[in-house]
Image (cartoon, rainbow, N blue to C red; front, side, top):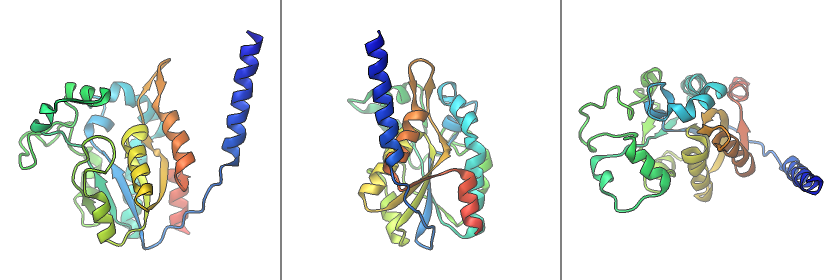
Length: 241
């Protein structure tokens, strides 16, 4: 038992040492910078959403709902373009012949469901709809809503195209959920040549006590992979200079 405790202690010390050596890159927000927000939708952020039972604790702890609204306000006040990468499942998506575990779960609980691309019947106020406080920003012309991503990353939508067409080179990333869509967007955007920072407390993730902590996993990978991890307060301070 003592040997096990010693081994665990040594591993933790090694991880702490490596983590402490990670350089925190300087991220300068300029005219080539945009904000990307993934899945600011009811099924993730509303207490009535189908995932609230597993993400609600993280949403409340991170103050995610309020922090995302602050980011919308900061973008509008500072003339920064915002791109929304939403998640929709249409009726035809339910006919897929194979799925990963989480895809199967999302389909089973009818997460982000809507009829089809041209059908908005029942969309208003549904789980796929925007969280109500954000609608007044998303409807303005500084916000672009790109095509939906289908799994986690933006590989299958037009996010990179829309960013490139606006001559965007840098992205400040936020939204839901941290260890899935946000992290997948971060990885793909970096691979696609964008400089990426993440607002860590403007995300949240699933937490199942004693089983998994998606928020901890997300925050670790944000720190290891992105150029910089902001808090909402730090982002606000930087934009006020």
